Image 1 (cartoon, one colour):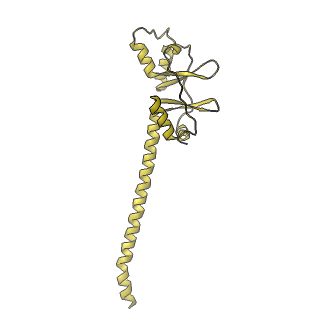
Image 2: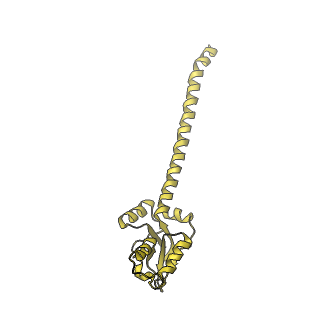
Image 3: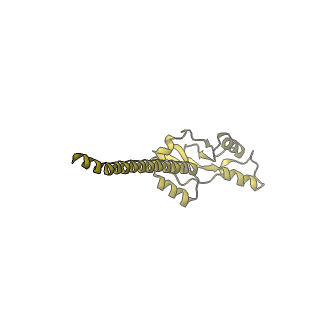
Length: 165
């Protein structure tokens, strides 16, 4: 349910790349869309991998990669982990942690629906914490109200007895 909740708060356009496009084009797309990952889709429409901002940085840092002639296929990361709309927060955190990944494509019935980032998971966690804090504050306020009401009743009880006598 958590992935569905994350996806409800996101733009559903997944920014993609083709395996044969230039690294420069992919890097420009990453920058233009302010994202850290592009899902690489092959000619058959399946996920071939992901090109991450770190993949581009490593390619540039090696000093041997010409971003105009190098292609995405040469630098992309494999994409063996995915999640579904029904995946829970705990499941995606476990996948990201054990798989050492910051991005998970969201798949349903073989279709790419979106991508969940570590930042999305943190935002979801913070949202849940804020909701919990609100619930706790409301519960504390209700208990204070009840305690004050009981104190008033207790204070008024002797007066009521005196008036009744």
